[in-house]
Image (tube, rainbow, N blue to C red; front, side):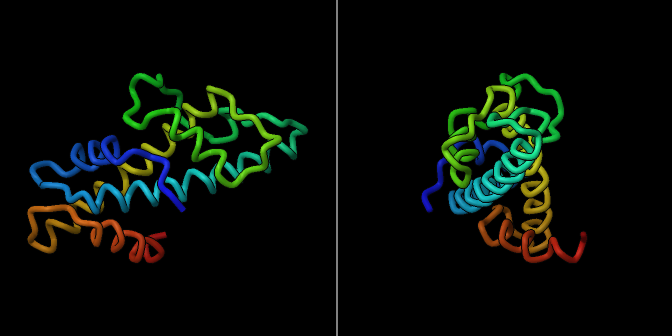
Length: 145
C-alpha cells in the first residue's frame, strides 16, 4: 500500500513534540503509514455509521472530532480525503467538514504518537526520534489501554 500522506507535515508534527531532538526520515515515514492506516479504519467506521443513518455522505459528526479551522491543521486535506476513500465503497461521498474533522482526529493521534516517541528516544539516550520509537509505541500501547 502506498502512503498518500506527504512526509513533510508529519515530520513537522513530530518536531513540535520532540523539542530539541532530531527526527529521522524513517520516523516520519512510519508515522505517516500509521496515520494512513488509522484514517482508513476511521473512515470505514464512519461509512458504517452513515449507512446505519441512511446516508451516503460521511459527515463531520461521524468522526467525533473537535471543532477546528482547517487553516489550523498541519495535515493537508487532499491527502486526508484520499486516505478516507482507501477502504470505503465508491458510492460514499466525504463532505468537506468530514475531511477537516478526520484531519483533526488524525493530527491529534499523530501528536500523541509523536510525543510518546520523543519520550522513548530520550529514554534510549538518543538525540534522534527514529522509526523504531514509533514502532515501540505501538508495541507498548496495548499495555496502557
